[in-house]
Image (cartoon, rainbow, N blue to C red; front, side):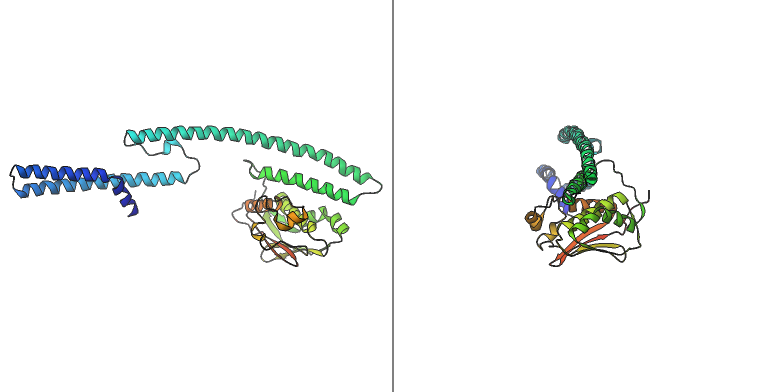
Length: 327
């Protein structure tokens, strides 16, 4: 009904002009002293023909409206999908839209080329920076007196480089996801092994029992998520323990006894660039780690959430797969 009233509003001038013409014809016929029945018959015939014309025009109006609504929801609008114009004015509008679409396509292509060049540059840079990082790690390992603090800072640099690579790959046209069934304990052990020295040096207790669970996921990207969560747990846990457990059906829980997250920051901890009160206070947060975790989990069909209190922070990763296929 709303659409019909919109049609009446658009065609009100035509309807008014038609009614005026019909009444004028009736008055003229009456001035020639014609009997009333032929005049009424003429008016009725005009009204019937006008109603039929309105119905046909409304059907065309509705069809065009629905087509435009469908096109408005599509991201790749093409000029050849637009309705055929009925008059010169609509033809002029169509020509203008065609020109705007062409300019948009040219601009998108130009932006795509610039974005691709930027991605190639930073990807090359991150791969090149890994060489001196690996050399420094080797030098530190060969020292007679290893420096654990320096090794830890070097590991943080390496983790930031991995974050850059992960960030660049998230929006790439081609991804390297390899979805298959993996042993969750194997992925957890890889993440724990990476931070084993930090657990020892910081005297943080690790509470972990094998979960004996297989998950449908991508091993490399899920490992990246676990490493980010463990890194945060170690950074913000001055003493106590980090617990890794599983909750039915397949919810991985990583809980620490650290300083926690401020209640007002909890709803935004997964936003890009958001560091929160504790992150700004400790000057350790980049505001990217948990954002990447959320994006990766979404791509893998998982969900990630956070809860916090005075006794620490709890990260829950729901590993039940949704709409994923084994490759």
